[in-house]
Image (cartoon, rainbow, N blue to C red; front, side):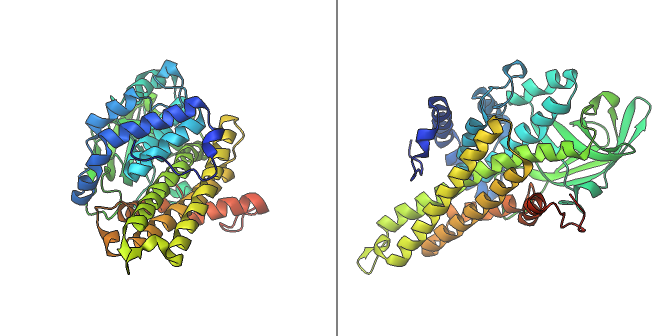
Length: 394
């Protein structure tokens, strides 16, 4: 393996042999099969061929990592799943996003809130990479304010009629099934909408400065009729939506470490090799200060994610703890990407080096699955008991 990891506090000693083996296997696969494809795909804004790659991810247990084997999962723990996310985002945020969407935002709600028929139909297919899924929540006019989404679904006999638009949806144009959240007379509910359904359109969104190796786009619904059995029967409250988001936010907290580590390693190696005034720039005090700042923050982020992973495995993690990890670790990744780009000087803007790509990607991750402001308010409400959104009591 070319990448040896960043582990200043010997956190590896806290991991089981199985957890380390999972991480190392994924790392080797990504370096061999995926990493060489990323740079040119980012430059051209041509998404990776997930029809080809998804079955490979599925065969390794990456897509269904945390789910029971009876549904095609690999039944690994949350720490292992986090380490997988770390390795995916070390290569590119879009890759980690693809896995988290399919695993945390679609498979998880089907597994937790779906009927047995829905579980048997979709979970094994998605886990094996034989079907690609997307999560339709964000709209042109509504992102953070989930409760105000405008997409509607009305009951019409034995079917539901959906109307509305979803935007900034990962895997929008290629998904075989979309889990779509819509407003009904009984609140916001989740619906499984299959590719090719009449009235359902899927569009690729171009001209993005971020997440350029991933498929991002728009979902449209114009009198789109789906069978009544396509509704998630157990997702009857808005809390179901947030439980899905928490799964993805957990993966992001780990993924951010991967991006930060890659930026740090790139900057460290460059500083040792790049000479100015006759000496490596690593010998300059200001350069060492920046490298140390990166390492300190990465180490704190690693410990935060590790502890959160153990809490997740014990079933004790709270939504606010997940928000804290997402908020902190994305801030760390942002800082490391920016600092690494700076240390590389003019070379920092070249796609021959990864920091500028991470810097662009992490801006999307900073915004989606809850903006930094939203996570601040989630934590603030948790510690004060007072909602800062309209001053409502918790």
